[in-house]
Amino acid sequence: MIKRYGASTIAAVAGTVLMWSTTFAGLRAALGYFSPGHLVFLRWTLTALAFAAFAVVTRMRVPERRDVPRVIAAGLLGFTVYQVALANGQAGVSAATAAFLINMSPIITTIISVALRREGAGPYTWAGLLVSMMGVGVMASAKGGFAASAGSAGLVLLAAACFSGYALVAKPLFSRYTALEVTTYAIVSGAVPFVVFSRGSLAALATTPPAGVATLVYLALVPGGISYILWSRANAALAPGVASRFLYLIPVLSLGVAWVWIGEIPMLAQLLGGTITLVGVALSTYRGSGAPPRVALSLAASQPNMRRPVPAKEPAA
Image (cartoon, rainbow, N blue to C red; front, side, top):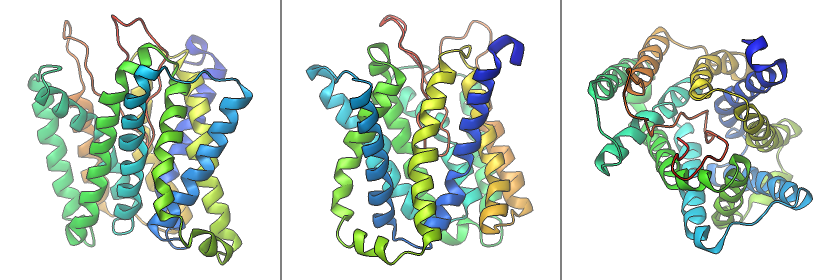
């Protein structure tokens, strides 16, 4: 693997997966210091400023006028609504449960694509959906699982659905811009509406202990910033389909991170149900020999899949 793709590429992938696997435990920890609204405003304002500064320093091109509405829509779906739903949802479900639920985004993307007649649904699609629903049911049966907080779990699933919408809305942009450009546009535009949560946020930040501030800065700059740069570079060298397979490690690693960081011990039902869910996701996005390309996009703990631009006749997945 290292010889084929290069040590730097594998290191970039490993670093990204490790960083993104800390997102859910980090959010649970941060919610102990901030309200969901203050958290998304402070975190993503800091992230957006960092990306905007990077864009200025690197002289990143601005999107063409015809693409501005699509960029705004991508930002609203992939960051504004997604992050608000995820932050509020994680206030009521465990980090492990959130990680597995978010990873259902590829299935949701496929369902939306089928409903819009952008792709067909084969037996693997529906079999994967059925298996994933079984996994969700097993997780819900856990004591203290999301069956006891269905509203919060629903918000996490809404976040997954929003990112699926982002995947479909942003897809045409990847044929004209680099992955890093699209992500920068989406983050900066998606962070603007968070200003509605700004009232009282600075006061909350001023009274937050150093541990809470450190968690906020970490979420903003590491899984929300550095990891995107690494992932963009890794995707420039990875073979098609390889990247998404690495992302399935994130919910599994999230279990260990949550255990170490916030003392969240995973229950057997969560482990079993999460594993079944991942099998279903993998099955739903499987392509048999001769099958047409799929639209489904894998999600990494709240992060867009990044690919190089390709010719317009072959849009990125």
